[in-house]
Length: 344
Image (cartoon, rainbow, N blue to C red):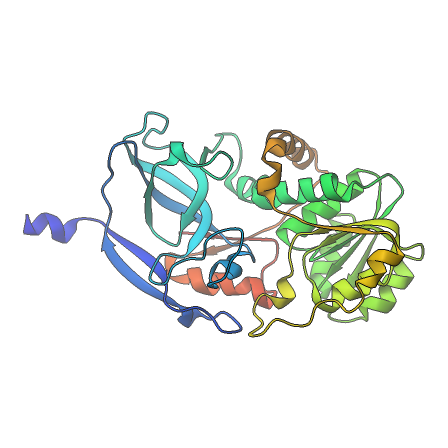
């Protein structure tokens, strides 16, 4: 028995060691190791193969009311990802199946996957879809871009659409959907390389480099008739600049506010919300969970557009379990180029 326990596989995990104050750091996580868990009736054991990273995960680390419960201190950090089934007491999952769902920063995960809430649970990976495509434009970020742009933004041909965080996994898909729908699309991104990709590969009409130009003045130049649809990922002064340049009847899809996710204290809100009244504009918060009935159509359209070359995408693939926290931090320094993933 002793020999068996010494050679039995172990489960490494990155635990949330403390709640960040201000910018998240690697020291907020602790590496732990324990035996690989067994499974009970109806449970599945999966070996994590890929971890996906999203800016919203920073909010899950705070002990405050939100749309999901915070990650508990001492628990593995929650994250979407892809796992390979290695043991199963659920007839819906066979050994060798690849499954996408909400996992954790662990090498092995268990759960009653079939009983999870529809749309928030686990789905098997089609064999003809590359992992990078599934976790990128066909994943939750692409789905969010789809419903945010089409259901909230409701772009019409010829209208002007602005997307902040336009080089990110969600923003880049949202911007290209607007282009597909016949709109004039202006992206806001940081750095010459990201802006070049948006112009050359994503085929946006104009791009504003917030790191090297004044966003407010460039918006007036790029959108002389105002902004009809704004897909918001950033917040802060970028949001204020767009609010001052809205067209009458503009629609704003509020997807993210990454500029403030690591603030130790919340910054003052936009000082010019009165523009929503002046421009008779609307703003709506965006969570994919409110649009689960749209997922099948979104998946079909996105796959068709990607395979036809209408949607370009990039994947930033890092390697190694030990690099998970460091990879997460890339989201907040702007180091990632496209969808941030890690292969264990």
